[in-house]
Amino acid sequence: MPPSQRADSARKHQLLELAYAHVLDHGLADMSLRPLAEAIGSSPRVLLFLFGSKDALVQALLARARQDEMGMLEAVHQALPEHGLARTGELVWGWLADPGHRKVLTLWAEGYSRSLTGGAGPWAGFAERTVSDWLEVFAAAQQPSHRDTPEGLAERTLLLAVLRGALLDLLASGDAARTTAAVSVHLRTLEPPVGDAPACAPPLPPDRPSPDREPDPARTRGTDRTDRAGRVIAAPPATVYAALLDRSALEAWLPPDGMRGRVEQWDPRPGGGFRMVLTHLDPTGGPGKSSDATDVVDVRFSGLVPPERVVQQAVFVSEDPAYAGTMTMTWYLAAAGDGTEVTVSATGVPPGIDQAVHEAGIASSLANLASYVEVADCAARRPKSKAKPVRTT
Image (cartoon, helix red, strand yellow):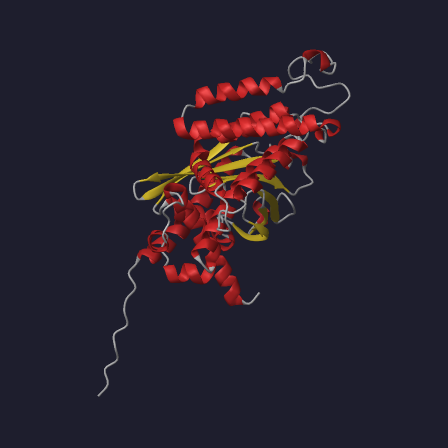
């Protein structure tokens, strides 16, 4: 790809994320290019150049909303495949009822309702694709012998109808307790009868391993540990969020002091991710996790809620069992005056990572992030000076 096309692609992605954050707050119904462009620091001409038309931009925004939806469904499927419709419905409803997802779900409901009117506009097919997406995940949760029967199809269709109706009720009323109770009533009908449950061995005493297998590492490393760090950054949430999902930005600010980073396999969408190769500038102080001088970590985006939250699941590439397991890092963004309060929490941290060292590293990355986005935001806000005409005699 020529450098000019790569620049266009990066700018297009950045503007799409900013526009997506804007429509989450304001909706798509009355979207006009000029106010949108002004709100995200661009111009109608640039938006038309990059996206082709207003309809194409709306299609891109709907596709972006579908990415968040698919990321949720994929996370549910990956968590416990083939674990039954009742448990799957419980996991999906937990995500739908989360107040942090209210904006993206309101936008989803708008796209769904507009799609029902038909036509060949940017909304066409959105509702149908959503139905197919959900039914596919619910089918994966059913037993293979039951999945392809008329009864199996009817069960997952009914579950979809219950969850969709409860969601619309929740968005309209805000009554999470009542809608959750209603969903729970239906989920109980999907649980197998007690007599059909498989026989289980007597439960083991707490902290006693099974005699025929190794102890569960999650139990021995302390699952209650949460590493935290936070900082207020002098830039709006949309700007900070964009820096969390920009490849060159991550390479600049994510490596803590004493390290440099390189991003590989970049895929910034829900269910996508990247590989970060961190190199110790002075490895003598502490060997790397993947080699004497490097830490290699595979990161998956399991939750993206612009401009409020980024959830990452990180796995270190290491032969040392002390660094095994999946660490979940959640980046919370909240408006704080003219800036953004960024709070990072990490759970499932491998036991080989010292908590104080880890929290210091997160704080160092946050300081780098602040420097990166504050400089960029200041430059974007600075009025452009007009060149004075050259006087000739």
